[in-house]
Image 1 (spheres, rainbow, N blue to C red):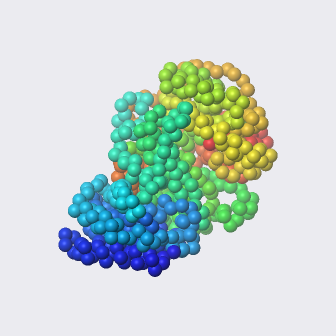
Image 2: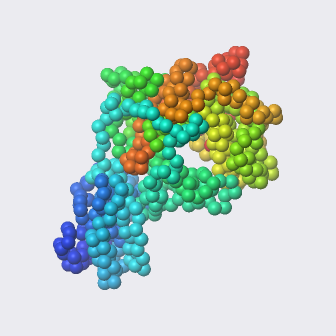
Image 3: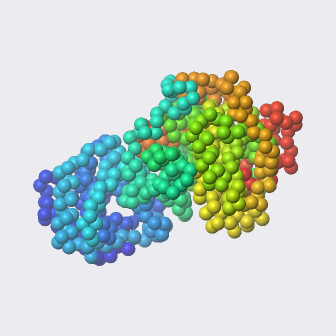
Length: 636
């Protein structure tokens, strides 16, 4: 809480700087107190006026730390309020709840550390900041920390906060902004589906992961003891109504440098997908009252009425008269702009009625809109194919994991074996021709963590195998620990599937030895075929474009031939745009959505779940609801 000592510290520093520096060589430095009140706008509206200090060096006090924010020489430099908001977002859960839910101040007085020596050091730092006028990329700046207890200094990158009331300017919305350019995007070869390499982006890792104002979290440590990949993982808390939700982001490569870059890219993708960041304001309306084309959320399948009755008031049944927020997107099948329910685009947004609980499925990042949309729809196809296989208990064709001809895949399979896991792979395509590979890590050494599932999709079967393998290889090193700490919870879920309520529960449940019987439809028979044989027909007819946009057009056409439309909505945050990135949410009504939580499985209520295998020629009749697999899927 704010105390007389806190006020005295701010006043003492302000008076010292005024006296020592005066107005020569620049405007008067301004001293602020960090943590005095909620500045994310959760507890109440934020008054940005006190933080409007363009061209002024500012000082911010919190306990033993003093921060100096230079007046940055850049386009859209971060202001003092940007810094306070970034700093607040990294506070511990208890601090944030106190600030944001009760309005209690979390400031710490710096008075015990304000001495002639620390004042002199702070004065020197302020003078240096005023003289240096560092140059930064657009939307970037820096902040300098002085430890008042030992005079150690360190500089941290700081990014402009997209929703800062001073700096964040929401662009105009409208149908024209929703257009996906569909420009040519040349690729180096037919089997490459990224236009730029991860190392080509000007990513400053520390701007996104630092303990003071990291845009994505406080740190991004590497797991150097990991025996398969070299993962880098970070996390932060995001406010959703009354709760703070942890969101993790990670990168998995065979070296730390690339893993860190991939981790930041994934973190930015989640950051942009969870909530709208610096995007046009949504349009509030009931479906019945719209005078523009719109995607009816019921086309994406919602929950049965009994679900809403049981879960009221947390979930609200959708009706055409229900007023909800809409954002502009693009129907790429008909090439027209349409309004899309924001709930389908930003999956933690809680500004409107919760008629469905969405996730990051179909959200992807690329170097251009076309690349982002391509990878988003490939993920939708991957999840749809996996769920169709699981709920139909379809005995998919097994692929020999050592038949890819790729040395890195062979080596990873061997590394997995050394960790006590056999790798098995399956072709889980159903009625869409794009290769989808499901990989299963089967524990063979008797330790906890029996089965781990993942999937990958790509026009190149080798890349689909590689993607699925990387997912399970990244998960299994910690599987034994997860099962040791969560074994009791998993056994309770086995006895009552209704206890499967969130994403992590699905993988945890299938880590039990006793749950393996439910995967026998896939694993019991061993008739693995070489990859070349499994995908011979595909390789003979597949597109081999040197333009990624043509690959995307091919996908759109194939979806259309199967009766599906592809919608794309721009989620790109300003931080991504400054790096040359695009992020899009893709929606294909009618494909099976991946849901987490046993009572939220929409697949059970979709015609496609019953008919897809018959339409693909894999069965001679439709399934009945009673024949569907009554077990939660194992997708992590």
